[in-house]
Each structure stands twice: as structure tokens, then as C-alpha cells.
Amino acid sequence: MAETVRTFILPFLALITAVLAIWSQAKGRRQVHFLTKPLTTVLIIAVAALAATPVPAAYKTLILAGLAFSLIGDIALMFPDKLFIAGLLAFLAAQVLYIFAFKPAAGHPVSVGAFLPFILFGLLMFFLLSHGLGPMKLPVLIYIGAITTMAGFASDRYVDLGGTRALLAFIGAVLFLISDSVLAYDRFGKKFGLARILVLATYFPAQLLIALSV
Image (cartoon, rainbow, N blue to C red; front, side):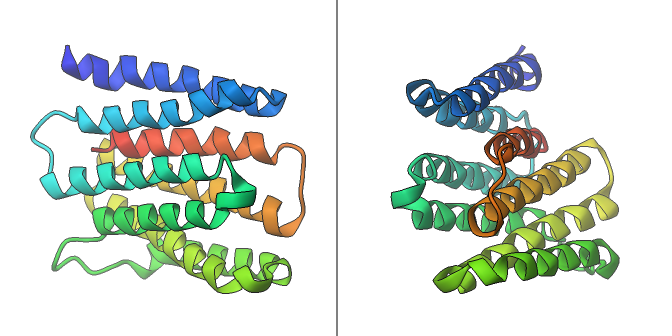
């Protein structure tokens, strides 16, 4: 029963609240958005928290901590004009925690081939954004380095371990990278109408898949 709640009921509820969060943001329904956006992440945290044993304790702890910092970031970014830096720092902390969760175990060398696409993507993103970053150039460079490292480790972990859970984490990491890239391009590059929808439409599935990887 507990596993059914974790793998079906909670993800279903999270998807419903995610759709409401995306809809309310697109329609300017602030009260609904302020409720459903953090609620979605809380439900995703519950998915990871209810993971059945045996689960590597360190992996579960790191993923839960990353999701907790993501929740802080979610709330901060609902006030982007005042709390953007706080949100960036919270999500940077989340990326670092995910890096430690996904990094290979001792004795397992990192695959350059798994990392190379993400390194190239990060360099391309920084090149596209650099002209509009101003004083944010260094913080954004650090964040791009963190999230591409996170995605690279998730890719390497899937290549090394295989299996459904590693695949879920890898897909989630890629979606997270896409979500933050859209957010950064919309804020520092060129604004486009569907950006806010695309950010959340990739972000919530990303976090849910990472939570299900526990």
C-alpha cells in the first residue's frame, strides 16, 4: 500500500497541482499559484521521503535535502524582483547536493563521453547569455557549472549502473537543465511568451523523476 501511495497516488496528485501551478501562472491567478507551486514540490518531497527500504541512506538524504532547498528556491522565485539571488543560491545548493548524490562511487572513474555534451551545452548557454548578465556573470557561470556537472554525473551514473532508477534520475537531471536554461534565457537573453510555462512544465517532471529515483 505504501509503495502504491508513493509511486502512483502522490505523483498523480503532484501532476495535478503542477498543472494548476502552470495554469495559474499563465492566467495571472497569483493566489492559486502561490498555493500550488510549493505544494507540488512538497508532494514530490513526500515521494522521495516514502521510498521503501533498502535505499542507500546517503542517496536518499542528499535527494531529500536537494528537494528541500528546491522548495526554498521555488518560494523565493515567486518574488523574482526581490528574491532572485536567494532563489539562485537555494537552487545552487540543491545542485551541489544532487552532485554528491549522483557522483560515482570510489573506484569508478568518470566517463568523459558522458560529460562532454553537458560541458558543451553549458559553454554555449554562457556564451548566449554573457552579453546580458552584467554583474550576474560570475554567479550565473557558477550555477551553469553546477547544473551541468549535476547532469553529467547523472548521465555517468546511468551509464555505470543502468536500471530504471538511474534512468529516472538521468532524465530528471536533463529536464532540470532544460528548465533552468529556459529560465536563464528568458531573464538574461531574450524574453519569449512561453518561457514561464516551459520552465515549470519541465521543472516539476524533473524533480518528480529525481524523487522517484530514490
